[in-house]
Image: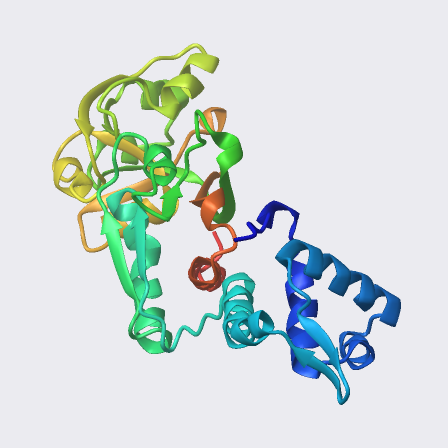
Length: 309
């Protein structure tokens, strides 16, 4: 049996072959393919050589298919349809989609935006599933391993930065959160008074300094962190009725202090820096995924509707 060298077989030749087998005529196939007759004749010659078969055989009534061409005709049509389906742009309809989205982020960061996302999904994409996954020490490694498809974070990736895409969801200033009767509430807070207060810190890793420690170092000051928490949800319980100060992004502080005996104060002017930015990150492998594109657009719409700070 003649062995076909598929490495030398152009996919475009298969489309020409399909048309030739349908039309059984070189000129008609050329018209249908919007090609010149010589081009189709050359393609037929290459096909005959590659397949070691005449394919089209001249008869008194015109051209007829060879036995092999007849056996190939139906199967070739299905192969080409399969190829078209494979390379076609994915069709996404949120109203019928049953996909699963996995997202990670810190507890309160997710709580600021994801409930509104779920409300939209229940209305616009009722069959889609959303799973929030507990954040590991490095959410970017979770994206890299495809454990999650989206990560909400205010951090920058340490490695594999070129593999990630992001879009800014929100920005907000940093404020101080403390008990409503904290001594710092009684007068204008100075940088020195802030540094001398006992501090609480939300830390994913449980080790290392916070961003405010670098800010204080820049102005020759230092603070003492006496409490580290791994998440934001319990901050109010540790802040209320104590002398601890937590330094948090404004929307998180607003959410934590709602209904509690807490007070928010701006940072002393000497310690104020650029607003904190929150991003939604995703891996390059999902950059063109229509489902994730839709979810990201919903999150952007949600943050656009938030009160400006």
